Length: 153
Image (cartoon, rainbow, N blue to C red; front, side):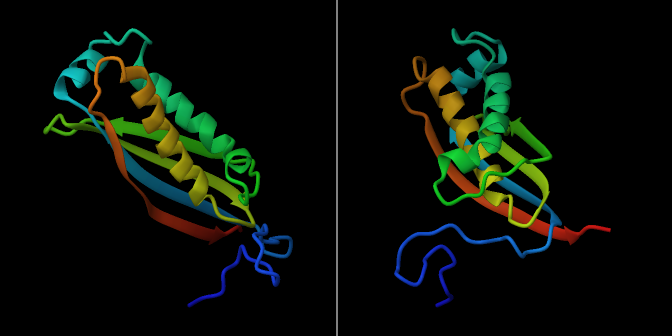
């Protein structure tokens, strides 16, 4: 088993010290989905949900959440992200909305939690906006697809 980086010598949770790590370009991509009924998708696409434009709201909520990840998750570093994008797609099966988020930063620590948070909050926003018309919704399959780091020139 590898050493747990967020546990100090006393066995207590602690924030990792990244002071001496080099600043590099970091990017992370995460995905997830929210399972909905096809009738719910019809309402979303025709802008017939009472709370407003569901996908636009979810996109903005995801981006805002990525920027606040350090405030939401206790041991995450607060990061001034340089880019975040949230995209949604509806497959031909019309049983879900796929959510993909990417986040970028030049920093000494990773950005994957921000991408995962963006996906999660986008899905929660869709759930909140559609809960009156679909009692069967289910959020799932949230995972990190990719994370990279590249030395700055």
